[in-house]
Image (cartoon, rainbow, N blue to C red):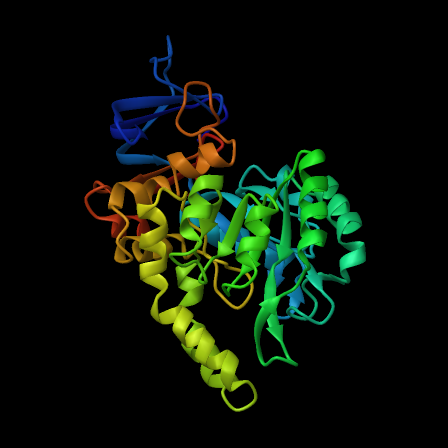
Length: 363
């Protein structure tokens, strides 16, 4: 498409869960529902259109060993884009990926700065590793560096206990979350186990990643406080393999990881049924490949979340939660077009027909 071309998307435009339109136009990179007067250089795309998909837990610029070079980060972002992911909440990365903001052909990123972890209580080369007395200062630093989010590591294996355990005392997370909120940032935390959740939620946390330890005792608290979860079920699928690898050295931890895995679908469905906001995230960029957003949506459906709600968790609802527009009049034209109705079968998301980013069809 030339810069002056007009894109006509026709068929079924899913502007919202209950807002289905026949067509939209893209003029100057932005969405219009009015046919532009005098338009001549028109390209037409037909199919079922959704807002660009959201991966709300993704790591661009990170792999299993730590930060990666710009070429590798670019490949990660392109893989996500080609899978239809056009908005990423980067849930912690040691890499500086601000250069991506200048690339109109790469997904938009909302950064949470670098992970903040307890000393020797997280994956090597990923996080700032600090002690509780420094937590407020580091949260303030990452709140200023990020795009409105800060990422804590809420729990990790304690080698002395041989099992998962909280990383921070209650008073430290209370002060840190209060400081982030004072600076206008929301806070999320990596949490696998049960034991860190109450303190984090009662301290005012906004979101919990993974949340595999969420049980019937804490679901009402999450629902009352409106704390969102991003289950990353495609990542939780790796728990049995992790457990097997740690069986000899940490048998208690291994058994715990297996239990969390076994009840993963019940956990997610219980959260959804209670009204807890659930959003799509893949945890790509650590040990997982990028481009898995369709698989994660399908996993939410397998867990028992209705297909329309699972779609919303990566489209309309996710974008509203992150404060970014969807297919609204005048919004940047970030959308994905499919051959058939994704509401009828979310597996359609795995095969985008066309990806449109900033008004341009990705070829």
